[in-house]
Image 1 (spheres, one colour):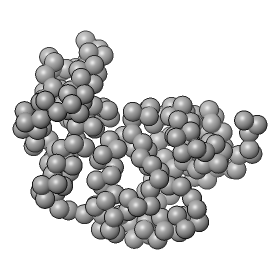
Image 2 (cartoon, helix red, strand yellow):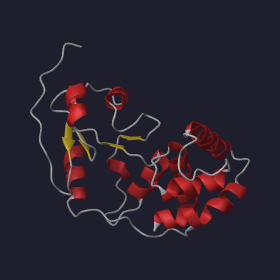
Image 3 (cartoon, helix red, strand yellow):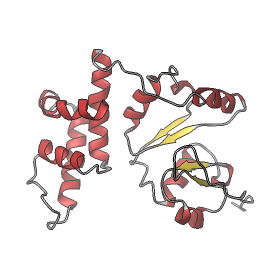
Amino acid sequence: MLFPYARARVHDYLEHHADDPGVRADVALLRAEHAAESSRTPDLPPWNPEAYVYWLMDRDRKSTGLKALQGRIWEAGYRAGELKGKGEVYPDVRPALVRWRDAGKKIAIFSSGSVQAQRNLFENTIAGDLSQFLSGYFDTTTGPKREAASYRHIAAALDQKTHEMLFVSDVPAFQLYVDIGPGVVTELPQARQTIECEDRPPDDE
């Protein structure tokens, strides 16, 4: 529902918010991404923000500019009451979040979706507003999900050491395991299944 909603409103949103500083920043980022595309990239359209957004959507590209723009469109939809659906979560999600919060654990999200989109999703679920359980939101402005440095940035932002944290990810964990160390990344290669890593001893930092 969310992605078709955003796609159908790209033209009007860009037109009506052309002077919005946030939208202007998104368009500038999209233009830089477009300029960085190889001239040999198949079917790359000449620079036009709307055309480039559709091109990125069609290829499911994890573009920071695109994700930020989608988040703004969804936020406008929620505020206007046009987006009323509740995101589905597994029944054990809320009880787990409550348990972890009550145990004093910090819970944060790292997603290719923008921070604003993450907030919208967690505030509107069939299990109620889950945003109250989260200590932080991180998107690709933090860095790529496949680079260890991104996870170090997240640890620093949460005032934690990487060996004190457990990262649960849907990306292959091997290289992150090598770069950061065991006990940091738990991979989810299939829904509801995990690969557990051994505990990492504290470092000397």
